[in-house]
Image (tube, rainbow, N blue to C red; front, side, top):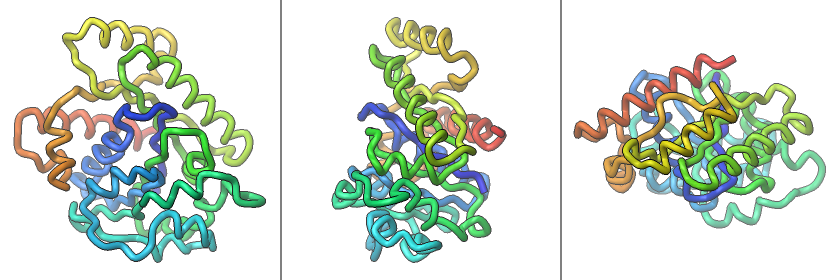
Length: 253
């Protein structure tokens, strides 16, 4: 089972969009995928069209017994390949330490799911609080999301620093799998400049292809479906991007 935390310490860069794009790409390949929504904004939960859910990721962290996460798994409207552990606003109350080994609560709760899923994607909130620490402590790889703006370099550096901190403190197996640059407009001079800047500093850690800025992404999310099922030329372009990014993520060691 591959497990990946998707993170950014700056809000509004499309972190949930990347999580959902990878989940849709995995489902298109027939991979059993679990999205764990640890962001109190619950954008991934809403886009996955979950309907009613009895338990949330907040309940999972509150209980934190070994394997208890299985009780919170909910089907999604994306079909049988994609499940979710949903988030809600109350999850924000879990963003502070809760006793000894607080950052390991999600890792313990997810134990036993290795045979049920091919891929687990954890959508973390845009801050280095206890929710993000739990996300990073529970996975093998971290995927950083940024956008090609003025703060891109600083945001990527902060996120990679967070990965390093959690790796040394709670998860020695954690590795950064790369930096995804989202919402790129190829004809925009500022975007081209920031992409060059990122690549000069981080080299091959900046993943290719970048995710283009396309309205079909928001349209699919608003309809509660994967962009891979949105039948437009732009959606096919975006779907190909996420499929190529998924190949890179799954091949990382």
